[in-house]
Image (cartoon, rainbow, N blue to C red; front, top):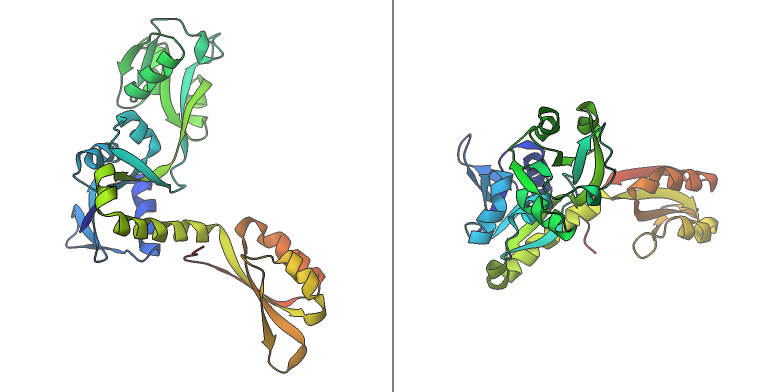
Length: 286
């Protein structure tokens, strides 16, 4: 049974569990607060801190894991391979200074700059690439206060919208990387259990793909099918089904982009379409 390390709390945990359940791998816990759960017949989930997951996967304690790509980059272990971008947990790792600082880009910072961060590895490598020797000030949280206390000159920290930085009198001067949740795997495990891992990746991909699509059905006049085909290209064109006892009408079925549903319905209504139904898709295989 392959072990999958999952975040034990927070939004990453909630989104990961929802993803697995939609893919047909509902976690089965033996008891409340259990740190392990079965995911179907082939996988076992172990629940640990998100920041520990890259190390668990690198050391082989778990064959697979879900964690942020920022944490994978910080660990920087060659044994860990990114398999799939899961799309949730999006954020950016940025360089920020006080609002009253004259600095506008990270390359302007001088040697000896003190950088408060919980990502010391990424920070060092980033500033080395700029040719700047920095002094790392390790923090485990609330890095925003460091420049105001004189503990550091700048911070390297995660942000989603930048609002927390602005509230705390800081401004962004550069983005180091963009992060999101990733499915990662142990390099050795990928060779030994390739089939099971490929099947899991395909199942998760089918859920992610479906979230961006909708299934649309509509009754349309047969003499408008050429226009309908332009409106509903679908995956390989719309499926057309005869409507019983209605020679002039057919039912058109197609998969459409979720963000285009409003426009699609409007165009179909212009053609006189009736009985339009839109529904979510749980899984979509290519």
